[in-house]
Image (cartoon, rainbow over all chains, first blue to last red; front, side, top):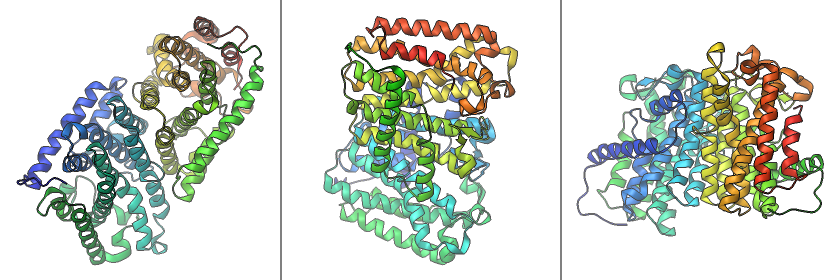
Length: 298
Length: 298
């Protein structure tokens, strides 16, 4: 693990990384065939909305930390944001979470209709794999992304989440943790793993980094559960209070507000330790990111 | 192109290939992680329904014709049927074609609900790429499948189709042909291309076979348009008469019944010529398949 003497502040780095990620995505959109005009426009609306670009940032951060260049991280950074965006577009559908607001704008189905929103999500998933392949990435990257995205990961977690919704008292915190592990942590973990592979990490580094990625994902989702209760629409960019209204299985519902806060803090601590174990420097970006995600307001 | 002295009859071969494809898919389902029980059950319901397995059959046929073994064709055969099945599950959704019947059984959303049906489609797309990657296929196969599935192919074609639906007189046969080329022929063409790549075809063979695959896909969709008018639910396994009721842009709507029949016949002739140009033997499976698709009743 390299230890740069001076690192930019995390906030500065995240802002710069957002710009970088957006440029990589623009590049991909300009090189890929995006189909008929309406579809192209809807794809672009979904993908280029003002997102945090957390997953591309993780790919870049970890790739750099193990000695890779930004250019090595670029394809996976684009692919994972496409994957993540597709999941948001489908989650927001009326038959799923039925959300009108995402990234502070009307959701894709509000603007382009439900059928086109289904297709935009479907198309973004194909494009993610097409982009990895077109840019000549290893088949290993395809495996990592597909596995984290599919039934063993994100999609399976969504299905668990659906099945738990409305079951109120029958759900305990352990079931919520299982949902979080697959629904959210699998893809955030994949961002870390993709960064490690793209940067040429050793097997040992990859195992340690996988712990960091998984912890980060769990912490991220714990804070998400909290923000749905404590956040406001303006900062959040989406509608708060929906989890309770929809009787979602969340940490807040199972552990209470203080219990969920404690869980988020404890996950953050485990994640810090995982980063330290793999040699991430104190005061460096990987550790600062944990605190940043814990304290986030959107 | 090898010219086996004795080939089984096409009908015999198709039946045997259906059994082979189902066994390959069972194998894949047993090796892949399929997530929580409900999701696993819904995935299996969607994928293992009584389909024609046309795309896996094409992968196998072409792979064998250029000298590859069944084992070489297996991963792509499974992946493309997963991809195709996902597209059926999403097409049948209430916000898309709103179909209750598919492969002679209630559609996935009728049995498992809309949200789970969205997830089953999403999951099947991930699994298709995961399976190609897990079985160690080339990144080239990922490119072929992703491109044919995404905005440049099937998904883009669906979007075009949506935009054309209900526009009645404003649509001409050329626009319908463009829709067919991307909505249907891209993925059927990909089956042929994947078979060629899996079997180690030369570049020349691949170019010729691409023409055959594309022609086959156009012919298949032309017959589909006809069957919606002339078929019956029992044989078809889905609801006929829907295209007209939904004011879909079809060859029948733009050319009339006789014009659409003529188009199907002429596409079949071009496809036969493409097969002959690349050395497919007269009386062999590749040519017999053209006649079979032209004459199909479901």
